[in-house]
Length: 316
Image (cartoon, rainbow, N blue to C red; front, side, top):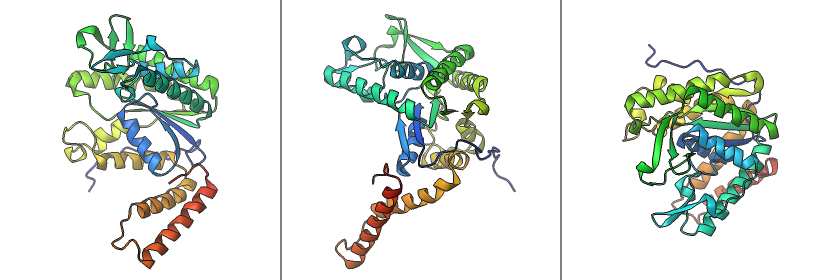
């Protein structure tokens, strides 16, 4: 008896991810969960340099500025609630010193441009089609930073507007890195603050726009994170206490699917070795000074050196 509806997912035949791949992850908070998995298994990854970006225009803006090598200045930041902020970045970049914020913005935008030129894969996770426009400048913002809502206009981006934004992202990235594979996905997190119907509208706009572009022959792909959550994991035991965000079990489940589709068979052996070392490093001995534990640590160090000699980017 089948107690789940299963999405038919096939292993990606070309351009798979291995330990020589360089993976960029941009977008909503779900991209951070996948980035944590890549980090745990010691892949080469670069994730959300400007923090979580929820809507496509914010991600597009980051890519435009990175490729154009924008230099941030005092004109790009503002002071609010005892901190300096930038409307183009998440509040995790905010600082008490404006000099520190400008330096961080310029450091991250430069690093983004460098990585996009070298990336083998870019995974873009879209969270919402709802966006906020700052009335004073008529520009869309990536984050409102708790500035009063009366200063913004809230808008639902149309399918056409999102499609144009995604096309711009692809065109820009491919202009400096023609061989890169771009994987789009939609965050399974529901934005209920927008409203139940409004959240459904939002996700449908994102999905419709993405499928205007998906073309494996051009190395443009879609991974159904959203559909896995809604159709395979349609039980509240897979959600956090807020009943909106996927819990650890759900994140691991979706990662397993992503891994089966995108990670090469060759990389699986290395992943198992990395996991063995990671679990060994987490192990806490009852007697750290014992001969047995010292021998265990010695064997672990040998395994680390062997892996690092094969892949010099791996650091524990």
